[in-house]
Length: 301
Length: 301
Image 1 (spheres, rainbow over the protein chains, first blue to last red):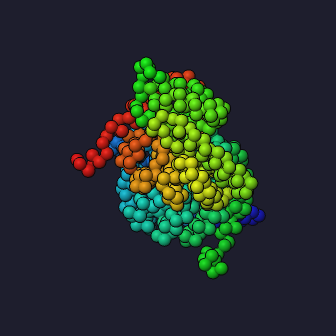
Image 2: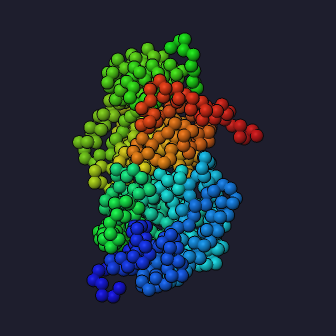
Image 3: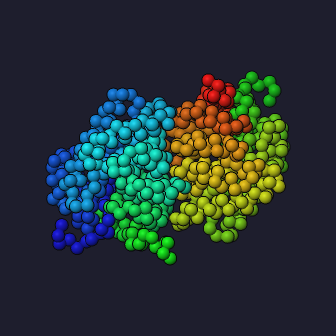
């Protein structure tokens, strides 16, 4: 990618979901061409390329790897499905280690975990939540052995029934704190957590133990599109105060890559190269400035 | 209403929003005909009938009044709009007192308050939340003077941007507890709070101080309909464990009417009488049984 004129914010990472229709080769290419130094990968396009080939492509790209999305989905109540989910997550742990090792220096072996929803016909939310915590516990040794960080992602309560029963950062930390911080952390995704009255205190709590394994940004837009899974917007298009959240995350000690992860049909319909450029621009406008603020300035003023 | 063969659960109240297309006369009639003894009123159909005439109709119906919906919407940042919102809420307080006095014995003067969303272009969520709390404070003396209870309704985080910046029961209680429990309480609406990992502890907290001013039920359905304002379902059609929540609310000391409040196009399109009957049936199946459990049995077993 030498010779490209474009540069993006050095901490920006393009999560592959933002260019959903691009294959891995295209995603790596447009990320580099937009001057973005880091990428968040997804298991499906990696599997399409094949893990070994994918790792080679990542190495050739010169990009950092900021995470692999995603493991989890382990709320099934019956034993067969639970065992299958754990096996799938063990594969994902290995993939995470392989891809992070292939990435440029600064890559991190972070596997994003989404809990999964209530099983069909099951209304026992506390039960499903307990199983999600148990599953993390069942994977901790595998993750530690592979040097991988399990990053529990609390999801917006809109998804509590059908996608993710871990609904707040506090709840994710309640699970994570049962295990060593080197192996189990949390994801702070603005879309999922921006509304939480306890957001600041829970980000600080996560920071004390260095549990923030990933920081993802995208906006909450209204009116909500008909498909709530595609309700995310580019930063600046919605209601989230990115400067405020970013400062809190920074003051909590997070200094890693920041992923832009957007599920949005209109964005997906654009050319991947254009999406990557727009992402870099939006990040520079709405997130970048909050990163230049030195931490601790509040107490110095 | 003597002579009607139907009876519903004695604590069921039909919130008027569930029969949205019925005028006040029709709503009162179908409620009584379905054997439901209580109704939750809305300001708009009351205003259509005229407050004095509405009070007379309520008195003639023999029904209890369980609440008036709704006041609030006081997050505007500019002074003119804030003053206008407070004036509107003072009117709603008077209406609440008048209608509750007209209702059958057991009626309660409860005004449901919805905070309102972020003002256009405003991303300062903590600021909007602070204004919502201030507005409650500005109305406390008026409410106390009229013998009315202000019931702060936390809304599902899906509405945090555009409808209600009070997002959790804990946050509603943080506001309510600044004022006397006789005048400021909270609404527990299953649709809004069912996902909250802190639900049980916050219901118990509300109960200790007798702050539960209203308990409303309806279901969370998936897939979410295109309009998230109309995403509510009849009890049993979705994912909420009504027995569990109802037991917790009961054990917290709430013994008042329980409103069924459903915003759902398909339900609204049915005949009001049919909706009322279906509501009574669904309530009897999914909520009623949990009300017959004696409180305290847990510690006796």
